[in-house]
Structure formats: C-alpha cells, structure tokens
Length: 235
Image (cartoon, rainbow, N blue to C red; front, side):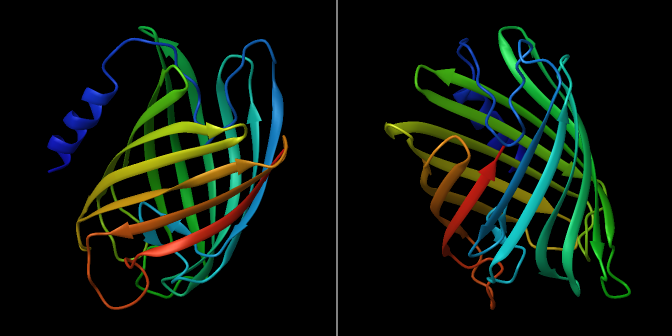
C-alpha cells in the first residue's frame, strides 16, 4: 500500500517547474545569508499525520531554528501532547535544503523525547524526513516521506507517505488538501487526510482552520475526525 501511494504521489510531482519551500522550515534563500527564525503557536488539537497527539485537547508549541547560507539548518522545539503518560514532547533536528535536477528538496533527521513517559513506553526515537515541493504557477505540491526504525510509545517501526496541494483563494488566503498513508508495527495502519484554509493576518501571524480525519473507527479522539483551529506566529 505504501509503495502504491508513493508512486501515485510522485506522478503528481513529475513535470519540471520551479519549487517553493512549504514553510514547515524557514525557506532557504541564499541571498539572505545565515539567520535565526522562531515560531510559536497554539491550536484546539495537536494533529500529526491525521491523528491527535493531545487526545483532542488544545496544545501549544515553540521552535527556534538556525538557517545557514548554504541550506543547512538546525532547530529545537517543543509541543504539548497527551500520550504514553507524557504531556511534553521535545525535538532536536538537523537538515539540508538544496536544489537539484530543477527541483528543491528538504531532508532531515530528528531525535524526539517525551518527558515523563510511563515505564514500558519508548520515550525517545529517531525520525527521518524527505520532502520534494513543486510549483505549478500559483499552486504548489509536496511529496513527503517519513520513517522511524523504532517509534515513540508502544509503536515500533513506521513509515508515512503523504502528498499535499496548496493554492491561493485570495490575497493572503490559501487552501490546501493533504492525503497520507501510515503503516506501522505494533499499531494500526491507516490513511489520514486534512483540508482547510490558512490566512496570513500579516508577516508574523497566520490563522489556520481545517478538518482532520482518518479511515479508522476506533474509540477515543486519536483517530476521530475533528475541526481544528490554530494560530501560528513566525518571526
């Protein structure tokens, strides 16, 4: 299933054109030189890969990132969760944004820790991520592949493949749709998706409203559909 999904996502990205960084990390700009960027935010639910990490409860996050002039970057961040007895997850990440074959890429490795996790649940894990993002005029598409050889909590090895498309609706207003597939050991495989709107109030503040859902029908809020509102500050 993962292989079929990845091939379908690659078909979306096949034509050659310029790329734009998706904003998940500070955009690589060789003319800007080395710089620091910072992000703070909060939302009504902490959603990752379609599923809730906060058991449907509100959350906050923060990140500080150093961007080198040659495309390398490193960051540290935290986010509040409700999983494995832990309420705070921290992360240290290093990566490289670069261009090749007329495309832009972002590849990174990160180490995550869950503070105060209960005994018997893994409280640390390595994760690896690879992005390709492509512009089709005002529309951009992203293919993302993530993998961990041994995940957090009770989850063992997992792989996530997603594709996302964004397009402008009006000045400062964007729509986007994301569809992904997660296959994992010692946890259920599932398909997750979200669709919504992001509005840039100014150069610092962005508001986001979107629906998240999965194909799993299990008790609790982790995999259930939810409308999530968030505010993000970047400077």
